[in-house]
Amino acid sequence: MDKAAIGSVKAQLHSRNRHRLGYDFLQLAQTLPELAPFIYENQYGNLSVDFSNPIAVKMLNKALLLHFYKLIYWDIPDSYLCPPVPGRADYIHYLADLLADENHGLIPQSKPIRVLDIGVGANAIYPIVGHGEYGWSFVGSDINPAAIKIATLIAQSNPKLKDALQCRLQPDNNAIFNNIIKAKEYFALTLCNPPFYASAQEAQASNYKKVTNLAKSTSSASYRPTIRNFSGQDNELWCQGGESEFISKMIIESKDYQSQCLWFSSLVAKKETLTILTKLLNKVGVADFKIINMAQGQKISRMIAWTFIDKSERHQYLRNHSMI
Image 1 (spheres, rainbow, N blue to C red):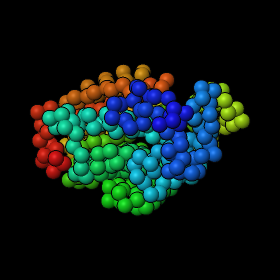
Image 2: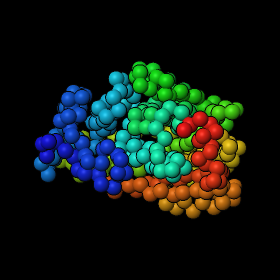
Image 3: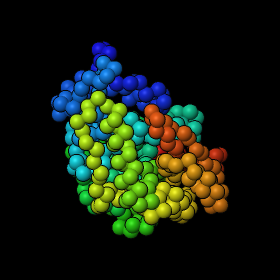
Image 4: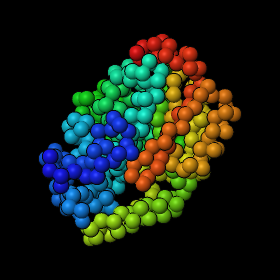
């Protein structure tokens, strides 16, 4: 394979992450020709794209989804966030490890494993990757009717996803599991990429800093960093109190559904948030919780997972609800 076609190796990604060896841009451009105009040779003689350009990033991630996860159709409006696939895939793989620990080291790989994605968004990244890698089925919730409509279109447009993703609108902005988890409905996992910021202004400042740094690090200096308009669908990036308050609310509400889910989980961006969350988890009386560090390049993230079910009963939980 031509060295110039490969991006940098992402050794910090999970060992099963198929994106850890970088990107074969020429191969991806064959899958999605619309990506080709955004590919250029960087100062190291490798092919790349301008990661400060949101359209280039969208085309790259669309190509990854079509190529590796065998989608027929995937699209979101340009005004919507396009999360990077490799980092999202890492979350899925670490969740798979969590289930393997409850199944004698074997990852359950079938539709009976049911996963709840809190804040599925328009892109439906987690269900796409989770079903593509392990065959799991998903329920995706969101407070944004437009996001639910777009995610549903993606599911219905791909035979592989059609019966593997059901999207549900959350009618209450202050609720997380309420209105979504039905009576006598059981999940192996819940996942969430929560709003990280406490205000739109904080989100804007972080975004401007990010794209400015990206633009400086690329030899393609023609792209001018832009400040996103954080309204409507972009409210998924921020909420009152930021991630600390959002995940705390999730922990408190999860207690009402402690017998309906094996492991609850969320991404955590800020290290200082963990202190608040661990104190709360002990207060609500969880049986166990885990903090797993994840990294992609210079970006450090964490997954926190908690369960109200004792270790001796977790394998039987999966059996009782016909997930294994």
